[in-house]
Length: 109
Length: 112
Image (tube, rainbow over all chains, first blue to last red; front, side):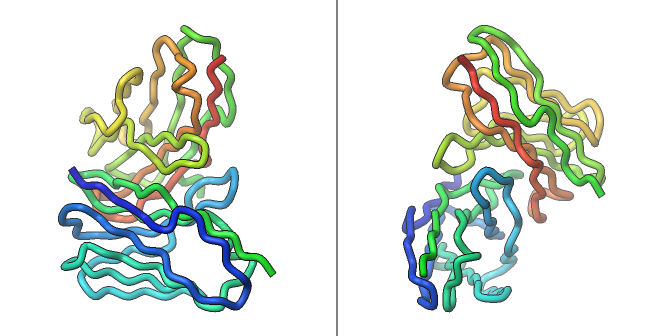
């Protein structure tokens, strides 16, 4: 069964800095998804990565997928406070999404 | 423009009580899911459904039951509530299994 692991689990960043969140998965997954969750809120879809080499960007966030390495990354460029949230990646198991444990991101001045 | 709607938003149950968490979607999605999220943790899949009349177990199904009599509705039933079921429950739906999933606002359940 598909297992999804993220690291780091917690990330404290200074505004203006760059960092990368890593998402590893255990078996073949044709799709990889990134979600954002603000405290006490629901999950909001950020990116859907459909194939090997896929790269998607939205503002200061860029996600990529390497299916051969079973690795997806979420890169944060020049972090701002509004990006503070928990970020989840999810892989596609048989007919269902399997989520990682999440990375809690805090951006401070 | 409702999307995925969950009710109730909050509930306190006593040990041994039962309840049903409601979930309905108006996007004509085939797939529906129930997840639970414990404090500071990720999401664990409880049950999912690939269409009306079809349900299957996820990672943590014990203590729960589901049914899917219509495309729109996917209720989650808790029988004999236990403190270990204290969690936030999210319902989600997607058109197919590999398309983007949309989440409801969650139900915060406390069992005392």
